[in-house]
Image 1 (cartoon, rainbow over the protein chains, first blue to last red):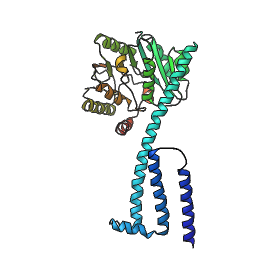
Image 2 (tube, rainbow over the protein chains, first blue to last red):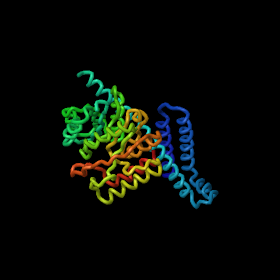
Image 3 (cartoon, each protein chain N blue to C red):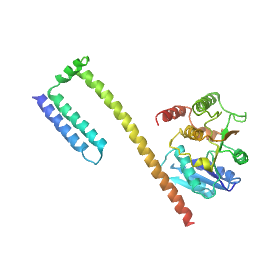
Length: 115
Length: 221
């Protein structure tokens, strides 16, 4: 019984997370990201009810336990996430720099015009 | 020297910036200080000393400050060359003057200061080793045989300046600048400069650990 409660709560949390993830506009890349995310949600829900499935997949790849397989996947996903976040911040920094520079130069121009 | 603009990146240098600008203005009438955010009244001091002040609304880093100064200088009519000059008073105005004269006389694109061409600059062993390694790296990656790639005193012609776009906001801009300059096949020269390591400039100066940051920033563009 407690397992069922856990499973249902976890699915609810996943659905909520998916809902919030899906808000906001975008393009092709975002669509792909969303498909992956859907897949992720489905897999997560699935593994709640069939945890032994991971072990079967793991065994197929010659990895001991399903938990180990999940750990490897998580490390890979995290690395990808870290890289894409790093990129995103770099781009954002460039844009902020341009904005700030533009503001700085305009202010100086205005100051000199007022003299 | 009326076609020359001196670009001074400033981050919290209120106690010295006024006197540095006054010294510079004895030779170069056009000085632009790029105030890079900060918390003190550097901007006020710079204005009082007679510099044009361009103020970043937020802190962006020294590389970004230089580029802002370059953009400002390029917007000024009759620009012939810019001088990059450190705010902490570690450069000599007389060196800058000499370097501009050489650039004009020999029709060079860039003159770069080096503290290793004579023995005026007193520098400790570790710092020398790091700077020498950086210079060696520059030499093999750009084929510009510089002796000191991280000297803040440089003279850049207006023509070359239009081709420089610094994207490294933080510490790696010195290497980035040399990379871009080297790609243009420029006529360049090094000039022996004296770096005055005062207690103030030492306290404000870069930690050697920053070399790690520079390498990292260059690798992960």
